[in-house]
Image (cartoon, rainbow, N blue to C red):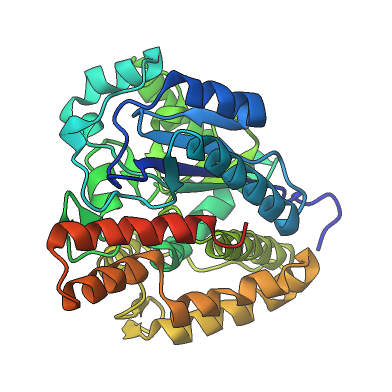
Length: 378
């Protein structure tokens, strides 16, 4: 590895939904005091989101995975503590099992109002939450190069993070329904490929100069160069209900990027595949999570996800050792044995219905499971 390489620092953002503990529904109009108290406790690391039923946290810049985990624990705990005073609770899930988007109220911010004015119903339906992971890569050219290579693994990360199987009281049949909602916006999905930072800036400037976007924060690809920080920002993942899963995926992500840099230092690189093939795997991850495997693009056949995960863990073993996150990376195996949040939600629903519960009560039991799992390990 070359001296003076990327710092591989980390920043993690998580979005939560706020639910009423009695009704288990989304709180449509939370008290203003809640956000004020959250800000007093957590400062600028907690912010309002597009809808009033959402709240977002963001870690400080972290030097390693352990610092990121400690930050997430502190921030999740803080939101839970403040929400509990109002008989509310956050759930780290990318959709709510039964609340309806038409009933939600928008946060009064100029940016959000402008977004809704432009996108109309496509924006009003965004009752969805995600997890965004920033990895510090200060060199512009390297950031673009690693973005091109990292696209391959976006479906794998999505498959391990799925937490949105329900929408407005229905089992959608998808493990990540969130992306079907988000993909109605422009400039979403698998990122474009660029030969250089200059080419990327040239294309972005066309949209900016034409007045179509204010800045690159309006480019919502699954993976993008951050508009605010010298980082590569991965946005494809559902928000992980269990903290352990969020930490594991963060660790895998930073290790994959370090592996790419390590290959680059040896005059090697990961093969670049067409967006068409990456999108095929993205769809499979949305539909099945890890249940039906993903397409191995080199072998041109579907491989069981367990095999793919072991291959990834083997590829990044050296990097996990160097970054001190061997255990956190290995915890991804627990996701396969325990199930993603989507699997656990569906199982909770199934158990309640088998016991004779109505659909409404079974969905409320799913919310209870989400409340418990969101607080697990804090």
